[in-house]
Image 1 (cartoon, rainbow, N blue to C red):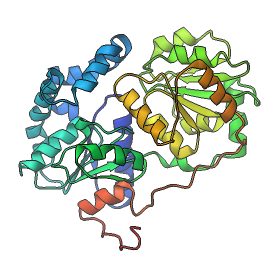
Image 2: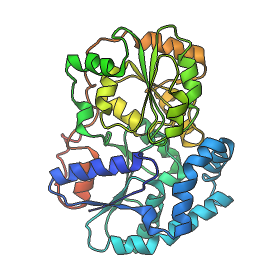
Image 3: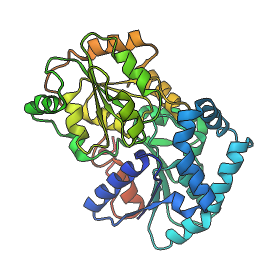
Image 4: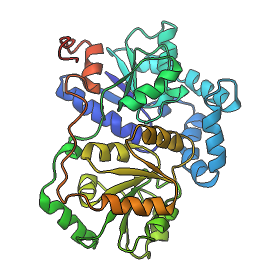
Length: 364
């Protein structure tokens, strides 16, 4: 099994790694390949090196590019189409001895879809949407399957004329395990946060993108709330927030489930992997000042589906802190809406011929 990902942020890679782990448990050998490594240097640098700076410094331009990518003849789409085509031969070579290919990155899905549609790729090809909002680049009629985290995403993608199937999240299993009661107090003590203070965990991706400081300012209007800001690898953001009152700044962390156990609400701006992890952990989430492009598209889908409200001002954010800060001290993850027989790894394994189709009654 070949899993195509992309080291652009952590969301695509995180889902790919978890898929490989689950496939391994099912006896399916799988490995991850970075689709951007198959591109010429100029294409690889354009995707990896320009993403964060464009969101930070030219958000209006990034939003325009995201919109233009919905239209095949606009310049951004023409350049992207070139990258998708350039990757075709390397992908064919990489997929020579596998039983199926799945991707967690949209442009890789376009390459796979084109190869399947032309009859050049003779094994099944699937894509797993890591975003709550669908997009033209996430969908291709040549793909055998489009898999999503939620029904809301599957419904959103129907406008592109393809069928999407919700199979649940690809998150590490530790996010779905109930935490001991003592975890909340222990983590808060380590962070210096009072036991009885409302606590918001702010996430902005591994690159610390977006208007995080404005979100911290808004939370500062609450008389008692504390903010724990996950700055990821953005050391400049962490330095700018270091001296704020009732603010704890963190770099890259591996104990995110424990941080979520200590928090009352997740404040996110992109709808990425951290949001999905909170969904699995049962931590309430709100969207505030989403990043342009896919961040705003994700916010709209999550808000319309009632999964995470999109808050539009400091007053709404303060009110949300009061609402969610009154939750029970012990929080159990929600009952999953997916099953072991229907999760992403099960679907992929069936396409690879490693798992029998479930009985009709088991499929619902």
